[in-house]
Length: 124
Image (cartoon, rainbow, N blue to C red; front, side, top):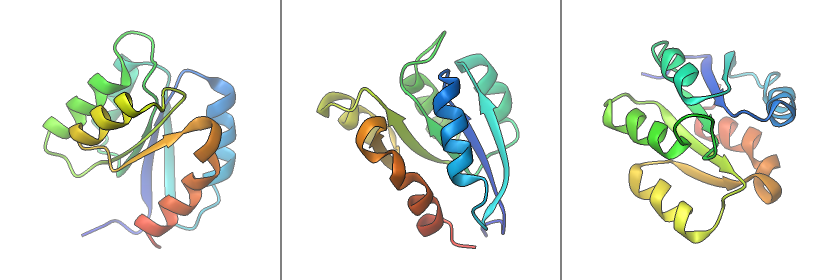
């Protein structure tokens, strides 16, 4: 059973991106709380709160977002992952999809799709 309000975790070290994405999604009806992590280790700690959805970049300080995606999917949690990255070539898209990412978005071209995806996948 899905929660009425979603717990979102944004994992990205680009503060401007984080501010922009938060401003785009914070007023959606189905958002309960938004956590932010700037690196792999911080994200691992916040994953203990069992977010419903993770917006995840590939390029992170420490370990990569791909390693975090692998960890999330191997944990058996129902957390969904939207990869959103500047590394949007076919290689990374395939790797992330094979590891279980529900969506793979290019930061440059697909940024505006995030609120729509959240609303569609998790309607209030």
